[in-house]
Amino acid sequence: MNAIFQTEPNLAFVVLRLGLAVTFFAHGSQHLLGWFGGRGPKGQVSNWKEKYHIPIWIGVIGVATEALAVPAMLLGFLTRPLALGLVIFTAVALYKGHWEFGFFVSGGGRKGSGIEYCLALFLMALALLVGGGGAFSIDHMLSR
Image: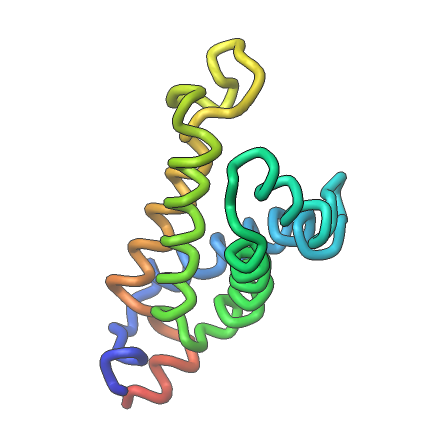
């Protein structure tokens, strides 16, 4: 159990954790609540099913992971398990939704966005999976 909560009191992981939480708040709010021009959960899961052939139950898990990640990352609670969920979520997004459009978000002029943004989120989540929540986290408090 200690492996889940173990983390160094490092401020770099706090910055990563908070940056990921803010980013996924905006991004996840599109999927979960339909804010910022999003489709909401039903529309988003249906879109993933139709466009990328992702089963509905996996889409529901993806939306739930985004929703749970925001408050947990803000608090630094269960950072590693939720970071693993975000690593998987962003890896699927990279492969299924962005890879064909190249590297840049602009998609090189094609309709769709490349891997640039999603890759940054993947690497941020991967760093938190490896390093944990850092200083000022509930995980750090529990691991002492």
